[in-house]
Length: 420
Ligand code: AMP
Image (cartoon, rainbow, N blue to C red; front, top):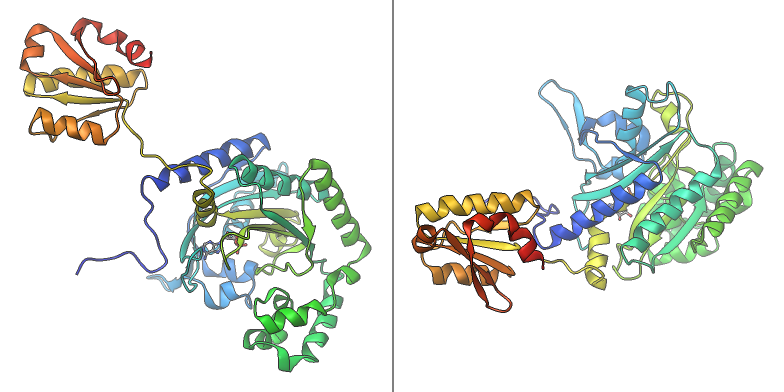
C-alpha cells in the first residue's frame, strides 16, 4: 500500500503555494520596515526548553508535544511554537551583550499533537516576531499595529483585535486566588477540563469554550479590578497609543492564551469566518522569560500568525487568486539540431529574466502545441530542421495566432519583441 502523509500534516502545492509565497514575501518586506531581521532556529530542541517556558500544566506541554528520546537518551521535542526557541537562541548567542534591544521574525513549521480538524493541524506554520529589550508599552502598540498592517496589506480588513492585560507577578496572584475561589464555589457547573484546571491552571477556565463555563465566566471576577498601578498604567498606554496609530480594537478580559510565560499585554486577532478555529494570530508580553531560561533580565514581547488559517481566509475572501505560473515563452523544438539552438534561445531569454519552458516530451508538433495551450503561455518559439537550415525560428503569438519568422541573429531583440 502507498505511504501517506501523517494525519494533520499537509502537502502544499501550486496554485496555493503561490499565495503562501506572496504572504511570506509581504511579511518579510513589511517587518523589515519596522527593523525586524529574520532568524532561523532548529525545529528540534531539548524537551525541557518548552516545559520550562510554556509551562508544565499547559495543554501544549501536557498533551500536545511531539517528544521522544534520541539514541543517547536525551529528551527532545519538535517545537510547538517559536518564541521559546528564539529566546534560547538570543541567550545562547549572547545577543544581549552589547545591546539588549533586538527585533526578530521567523517563518516555519510548528508541531502540536492536537485532534486535526479544519484550521487545526499537527504540522502548521507560523509567521512570528519577537522584540527584546523594550519595556515601553508603546512597543506593544507598535507591534499590534504592525500585525494589523500585515493583514490589511493582504486585503484582510475585518479581523477583530482583542486585548487584555494579564497583570504581573505582583498583582496576578491576588486575582488568581480570587478567581480560584469563584471556580471553587461553582464546581458543579464546570466542565471536566476546568475541574482539572482549578487545581493547576485556573485562569485557563476564562477562555473555556464550553457553554456552561462560558456562562459562568460572564459573572466571574475580572483581572481589571486587580491590576497594580504599574500594570494598569502600562495597559492604558498600550490602548491609547494603539488608538493613535489608527487600529481599532476591543478589550476582552477573558483572553488568557495557552502559554504560561505571558504577562501584562496579551492580544488576539480573530475572525468570524473560520468557524471554531477563529484565532488567526495571537501574542503578548513575556518579560520574565529570558531570565527564566537563564539569560539576563531583558523584557520581551512577541506574536504569531497562523499561516494555514490566514491562507484559508485569503482564499475564502478571494482577495488573492492563486494562479498557475504560466511560462512567457514555450519552446517547441523538433530534432537534435533544433534542440541545441532552442537551448541557446532559452538561455538568452532567461538572462533577460523571461520565464521559458522547453517541451522535452512532445512526439509531434500538434501534441506540443496542445501542451503550450494548456500552459497558457502567450508566446511559442517553434524550431524544426527546416528553420535550422534557414537560420531562423518561428515566433507565434498565442493570442492573435500570428506567426513570424525571426532570424537567429536577432535573438537578442526577442525580449523587446515579446514585451511590446
Ligand atoms: P499560539 O501559538 O497558540 O498562540 O497560536 C498562534 C496562532 O497559530 C493561532 O492564532 C493560530 O492561527 C495558529 N495555530 C495554533 N495552533 C494551530 C494548529 N494546531 N493548526 C493550525 N494553526 C494553529
